[in-house]
Length: 110
Image (tube, rainbow, N blue to C red; front, side):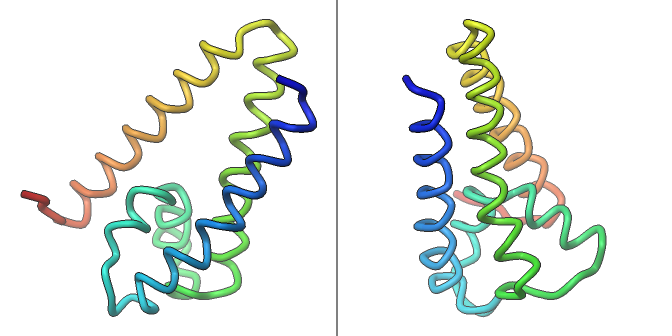
C-alpha cells in the first residue's frame, strides 16, 4: 500500500468517525460507548489534563489526530517492511487502551 494512501485513509477515518461519535455521545449526555471504543487515547488525555468536555475543540482535534498518528505509524512500519507487525501492534495497543478506559470509568457491558 502506498504511504500517501495510508495517511489519507487514516485522516478520512478520523474525520468521519469524529462527528458521528460526538453526535451519538450528545456532548456527554448520550451513548458514550462509541467514544470509548474509537477514541480511548483522546478521552485519557482530556481527563488527565482536565481540559474541556465532550465536544470541545481540543477533544475534536485530538480525535482527528489519533487516527492520523496511527497512519504515520503504519507508514513507518511499511517503510521498514513490517506493515503487518505494526498494524497488529496498533490493534493491541488500542484494544488495551479501550479495556483500561472501560475499567477506569466503571462501564460494564453485558
